Length: 197
Image 1 (cartoon, rainbow, N blue to C red):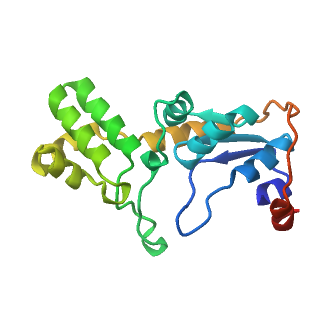
Image 2: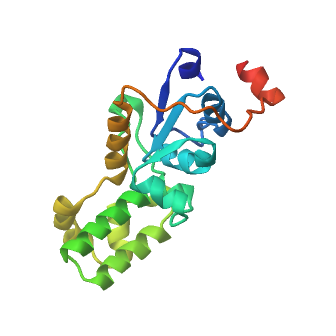
């Protein structure tokens, strides 16, 4: 909401917190869109919100957005991960499923592991709760083993969230965005008015 108040003409949403902090609210994005502000989303929460708000004019960017908006991907937890404290620079302690699956696709494409081994990795990754998903737990559960997987990851790792985030940042470099009046009306609920207006 601060971006709207500050006169932003475009907003890019990549990620956000959840669980202990309220995530970016759909209503906030719809409010920005109703003010003819271009809102783009990619990579993580940005991809989720872009898929959910596409009918209202939010622009989604990247593979992860395409997977959500097409219905190929439906679980919010596919982009979720846990991370360390701010003092350490928020280092990731788990791996989002979107990155695991992009990496498995690269491994398969290069023929580094058999199709059966790639499927075992994918099955293991999907079976793990996002707070427990690490390459070590995936390797162990799949039966592939950490020592086998470690050198493969060194040259096959794909950070799909980062790739999509970079695409959003490139799109934000545009100097002008198309402005089209919304063909819907924003409904400022009593709670929204109390919080923001």
